[in-house]
Amino acid sequence: MDAKLPPFDSYSAALQQPLVLGTALVSTGVLVAWYAVWHVKGWATSDKQRAYVLSLLSSSVTTLGSIPLIREVSQNGWDLEAIIQERWWTVVLSTFFATFLFLDLAIGVAFYRKRIDPLTGWIHHTVYMFTLAWVLKNRLASLFITMCSLEAPTFLLALGSIDSKLRHDYTFALFFVSTRILFHAYMIFATYQCPSITTGTTVALCVFFPLHCYWFYGFIRQQIRLSKKRKENPVVKTEKREPVNFRAEVAVPPEFTSPSTRVAARLSMPRLSKEDQLRLRRRLADLTARPLLNHMPDRFRNASIDHMVDRFAGSSNVAVPAY
Image (cartoon, one colour):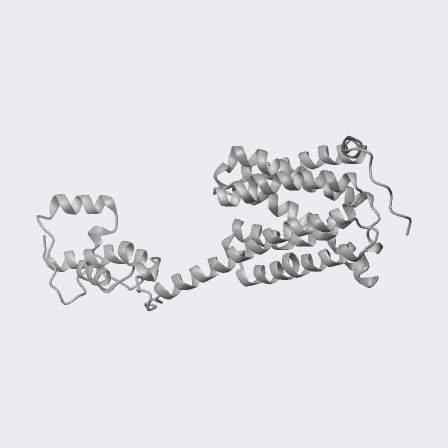
């Protein structure tokens, strides 16, 4: 492994690298196109869903990018000297993440302004952008991408926010504790022990650690609140009803088989008998009301509705008047 390269002399020299500028341009196109596809296709309709579209892509890319570095440092006895050397692709991923932070605010102002929280949105993203500029200046991109394993909970949060069926709170909690609490705490200790890493890096990690603890505290309070709500309003399972048989054979008078014969019968017949009216009612019920009941959710079904249909069809014990 080559010796660690010295830091850049200035922020402008670090940020004006061709690799950084090119990556920022390409990342902007990719992220804007990603959001545009979701917007045009209508895959994200609510503000909450739209707010996590960019996070879904960013967190997945950065989390995957951290895996090779974590594997490498684990194979070297968790010695950070093994991964401290800057790599070109870690600079690319760091620039990609900085571009995401900027676009998340820029696009958010236009499409999901209400979801941009002052602390976790404006302050968090702005501080992180300045932090990434400092990372690139000091050639700490590899260390930063190693820390991007902390984006795994963000990926799970984005999935659950876009599709509630994919939300699993306890899985999220497991990844949050293992990455943003335990792994983050270890990295604070490891950077302090590593001679090639300055004290400023350890201080930067210490600054962000309380924020993760605060977020997890909020998650615990949310789970307690949801648990109390479930106890106060338990879900009552409705009794499953047997489907209504609407294909029963019903004798229909010949005069009702077509509109022409029905009109002719109306002109020639002074009045239908009660038996014919009863057969007609049953036929109408079998063709309209009963199929509708079969497709109605059980929670909307009750005995009074079934009784009303039976009465209309003349199959209940209540007499049906002839009109």
